[in-house]
Length: 319
Image 1 (cartoon, one colour):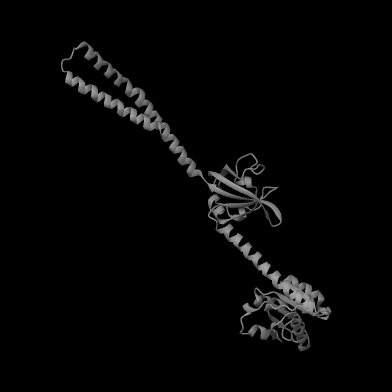
Image 2 (spheres, rainbow, N blue to C red):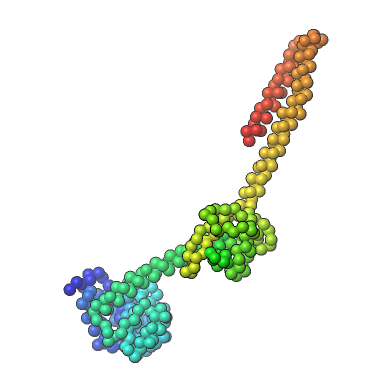
């Protein structure tokens, strides 16, 4: 017979010593060295100074001298925290065993049907199952934390109706709506573009959005399909790029103004400059002015001015 050599720490809350010894024997048949902590009453379990974090599972009799039924299950579950609780019951309490599952118990066993194989199977199954449940809860908590604490506004909408299913705090802050004002409303409450936005293969698009106070903003939207509460949904991350667009527009306006300046420099300023050069040439040819050195300086200054204008024009066009 194969015996499990893994170390198990087990709590049994059972007032019937005969039933307890039978459970102990069954566990010892399948587990090499089980550590079993026995309590006969709920009060003993509650007042125990030992830490429960070291224990793997609790087997709980539904009828104890000092507490029974719903109250017993709820109190043990409250104390056990992250330890699976398997209830033990007779046929007479079978219906309540099912209720115990609804309350949060991990499993139930009928005392008259228990054997070593069944008990061991229940122990291993419920320990592993509970570990997976804890992992799922931690994963869900992580998702909720990432969702709520994200600095970017996030919507979750129904993929078919486009109704808003959930929004995070950043979404409330940007659009100035409360969550309850948006949930179950159409995404068109905020997304003002007429065309459908989720029937193509794009995952990043730019849209016009509207806040609660009717202010318009430009948003870059990233989206993807997910499963939310067993329904096909779309998660949307919104990024307000209004100021960035305005900044780009300002730069574009500045560039236009600079090009206008360049045109003035290259045409309006150049025209009289050309006239000056022409006059200097005429003076030189006619020898109507005797101060040749003065004319040379004038000519050089005009050439330098032209070079400067050309440099400014070239720099303007390169912006």
